[in-house]
Figure 1: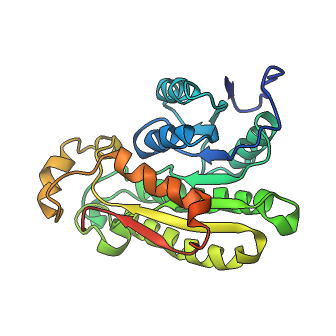
Figure 2 (figure 1 turned 180 degrees about the vertical axis):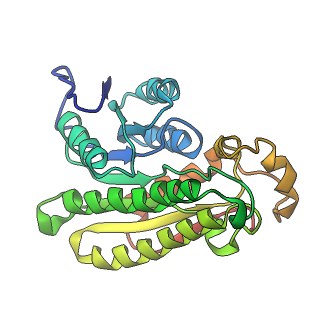
Amino acid sequence: MIGETEPGSALCAADMIRGMDRPITIITGASRGIGAATARWLARAGHDLALGYRENRDGAEKVAAEVSGHGVRCVLVRVDVSQEADVDRLFADTAEQLGPVTGLVNNAGLTAHIGDLADTPVEMIRRVIDVNFLGTVLCARRAAQVMSTRRGGPGGAIVNVSSSAATLGSPHEYVHYAGAKAAVDAMTMGLAKELAEDGVRVNAVAPGLVRTDIHAGAGDAGRVERVVSRVPLGRVGEPEEIAPAIGWLLSPESGYATGTVVRVSGGL
């Protein structure tokens, strides 16, 4: 069953069955790439899903149709993760339509520009930091509020999508993005310790060079072919190769893992 909400509206979904004993997971940036692949993986694993998207409604609807084919419940929520009110609505709508949130995949991200920092416009730097770091913090903050057992929540897991850029620095491409992702790694470790007694695990996955639209969005659609020689495994990764790591960190099988960054980067 697919539902959708827009800013300022609430979906009445009387035909949605509540109380099903399944994980309820929010994925931001779910309309394409790693977010879409993760949605498909989690649907096969039996997660009910809230798919957050900002602009690509057609892509989000396509993903929703795919995951619903696995018999799980799915809702779409339009959200700008850098805006607190949007984030609060994302979690509220998910809880109203699906039930208590037990998982969050902080995947929304962009690089926006490729080039030296000296040539990167300040407004692009701000947007990259706002989405990749502030957006991750705001979503993780709200997840902590609603999932913490100490606060009356069900417990759960948060997975932040970082990047190998966090340790490589990405000179001459996007050091501002690399810095934002390094901040995500630091926040992951700190929040994991903060929530360790609250029944919430916090981890991150750091992909390397992956074939997604993020490169075209930064104005360099051919980047993966241009830089693939840097990858020790000698090839570009696919979103479907990142999703299982995210899925594992959300699962009971990773119950002793928290505060860690799992690198899935072909050796980078």
